[in-house]
Image (cartoon, rainbow over all chains, first blue to last red; front, side, top):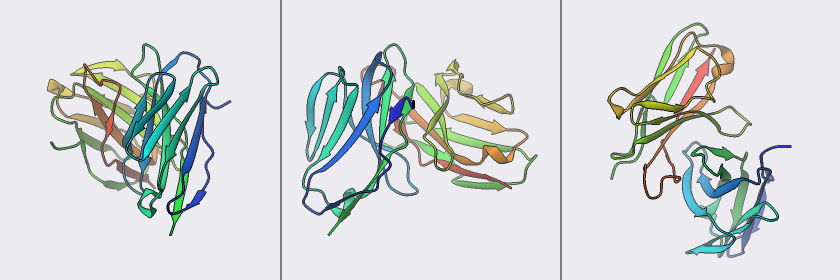
Length: 111
Length: 115
């Protein structure tokens, strides 16, 4: 079982729709959760961090965390073609600084 | 504020040669990390510096890899001698020691191709 699992996609959504990206993790000691966006050939860019159960909203992005189900998700409202990228989920165990990454989900937002 | 920078952006070398990658973290970030992404795989941790000290080098694949951070500023990662399986994109990231210390900011990466 992979430590951090993401569906590789691609996830294709129409412009203006809500894109829902999901991530599950295996380590129950995980405390910190991150979403990175990576455009092709570019570096990962941190877009959201979440540390406690529930929802965290930042503009069009909402991160959702459910530690009991070991599940973290990212919702992108009003998706734009410029949101087309690979979204990486990263998880850090309590007491550590080192994230474990998933392989990423490719998102395509078509006009 | 300048972001994390890496040099070179691309490097193509032959098996057995030596390559040195450089990373300049965000000014004031004492945490510095090296990662590698092999094609089709997830980003994997290599090592972590706090200032000039190696905090965790559990991800270094073998003794052909040597990382340094003299003076606690920029860092270098040397691969000697390079093997075919060392090909991939090497990312550097940095973060603060206090406050948002878990939030890492990545450099553009160095794409290493060993032929």
